[in-house]
Amino acid sequence: MDPPPPLRFDWERHLLFLEMIVDGLPLEYETQEINRLTLAYFAISGLNLLNALDRVQSNQISNWVLSFQVHPIRETDLESGEFYGFCGSRSSQFSSSFSEVSNKNCSHLASTYCALAILKMVGYNLSNINPEAILKSMRKLQQHDGSFVPIHFRAETDLRFVYCAAAICSMLDNWTGMDKEKAKEYIVRCQSYDGGFGLVPDSESHGGATFCAVAALQLMGFIGEDISPNQEVIDMPLLVEWLLQRQSGDGGFQGRMNKPSDTCYAFWVGGVLKMLGLFEFINKDALRNFILSCQSKYGGFTKFPGMKFPDLYHSYYSFSALSLLGEPGFRSLYVELGICSDCNG
Image (cartoon, rainbow, N blue to C red; front, side, top):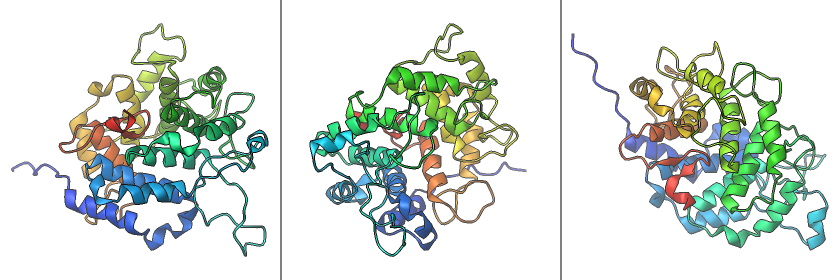
């Protein structure tokens, strides 16, 4: 019996899927209005990875993103404890009566990361956005243990927001927005007994949290492609062992022990291996086949094989993983920041 033909990346369907998202969110995304900037980041960065950013109007995109920024009225506002970054949506924060839009400043670290990433992708000069206000107010979000809250009221702290803060400082090329030493101490405390990182200290190792930890440490300059046992910042040999154990028999990566393979972890775990110079130690052909087995006939990718409809989150991280694998026609990815390599020049 002849072997099955190799799986093929369906370029045009994927481009149409991303263009549809940029033109207008499908009905299923209505409940994610608060994450509008994040969804835009997935779609625009996806087009960029597929070398198709010319399908959108850069000026229109940058003006739209800038409309989400919150500016201090007075210089003294920067001492108030409020964060002056970007909101996730202009219309999703409501007053207590839920009858009208509130004027509350809802700037969020994740939305600010996505906004800056989009602006860099479309070639906007970030010096025009008052970076000092972002950085000075962001530093007040850092907690005594080195972690960050993502917004200046009612929020949790975990590694996601330490990563966002580090990425924001890196993109703005200014590290006054955080105390790097304190952030490093918090990250180190999140490494688990098995080598991976949990979202908070003493929690289960998780692929996404491990990416946030390692990427933040690299952006801050505390680690590089150094996997020697003498690595002083974190237990590197234990981390490497945990990472390499995440590729399953089906070729995909799992995010946690005893969980099924999931397309997004091809980036979250694969990206860490790439940052550490260990990507050559995985079965890349098997990983590619797993990702393409989750390709939807409608364009985009699903979370698991056999699912019918794609979603934007797993589609974007499937595109990112294929970039790491060197899929022909894809642009290369600057893994630590989640943007194309030449966008950070």
